[in-house]
Length: 360
Ligand SMILES: *Cc1c(COP(=O)(O)O)cnc(C)c1O
Image (tube, rainbow, N blue to C red):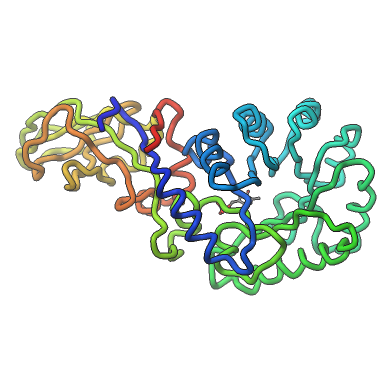
C-alpha cells in the first residue's frame, strides 16, 4: 500500500486488541477512560476516539480545550475531561460543549468560579505538577466542599509519577494512600469519578478508585523502556516512506550536510523523503536505521529537514519507489527512543501533522 512520500498507517484491530487485553488484566474490572490527548499520541484523536466509542468507551481525557471541542464536534458523546489548564476566556465553551475541567488549585478554582462547569479536582499526591496538596487531607476536603455549589463536581483524580518503575513501589503506594484518604474524606458526596491509575498503575497496582486512565499501552508502547508489556500488546502505528533515489558512492566521498559521513568503501546509497520536519529525529543521524525489504539500512550522514540517506549496499535491488519502514511493531518507537535517549511517547507525539495518517 503505497501512500506517497511519508505516511503513517494505524491498525485499529491492534488498538482494539491492546485495549481488550489490558482491560481483561485490570483488577476488579475497573472501567477505562481513554487518554487521547496530543492527537491520541499522534494517532489522530477524532478517528481513534470514534473507534473507541464504537467499542463502548464512554470516558475520554484530553490535555486542552481545543482537543476537547474537536472531539465533541466529531460526535464523541461521553465524558471529555481536560486534564490541564484552560484559560478563563474559554469557560463558555466548556459549558456549551459539556466538557469537564480539571481544577488545578484553589487559585484556579477562584479564577473560574463564575462558570458552573463540570469539574474534577486534581489532587497532588507527590508529583508536584498540579492539584491540591494531598499531604493536607483536611485542606483538600475543605476546598472540595467549598466549591460544591460553585461547580458541578463530578470527581477527583490524581496522577502517579513513577508507577512504571518497580523500585518506586513504596512511593507509588504512598501516592495511592494519600489519594484514598482524600477520597474517603468526601465519600458522602458520592462523586462518580475517582481515579489515579494510569497505564502502568493499572497493571502494577492494587485496584484504586473506580476508573483507570489508559494512554500509552492502548497504543502498544511501554510506559518505561524496561516495562514488560503483556503478551499480544503491540505498537499499532507503522511509519512508512519510499526510496526517492538510489546512487553509487565512491571511497572518500562524503554524504549530507556537514560531511559527517565518509565512505570507506564503494557504497549504494538510497535517499528517503522523510526528515526531521516530519518528526524523524535528527539525533538518528549516522545512528539509526530504517528497514527496506525487511533488511536494516543504516542512516548515513545527517538527517535533513525533509530527506535522509541510508546505506543499502547490502540490500539487493533497491530502486526508486520501494517501500521503506521507519518504524513498526518490530522496530518500535520504544526501540527508536532508546537510541536517541528519550521515551516512545515523545517519538510518536513528534510525528508531524504533515505526515498523513491512514487507518487499516
Ligand atoms: C498522560 C496522562 C495519562 C496517561 O498516561 P499513560 O502513561 O500514557 O497511560 C493519565 N493521566 C494523566 C493525568 C495524564 O497526563
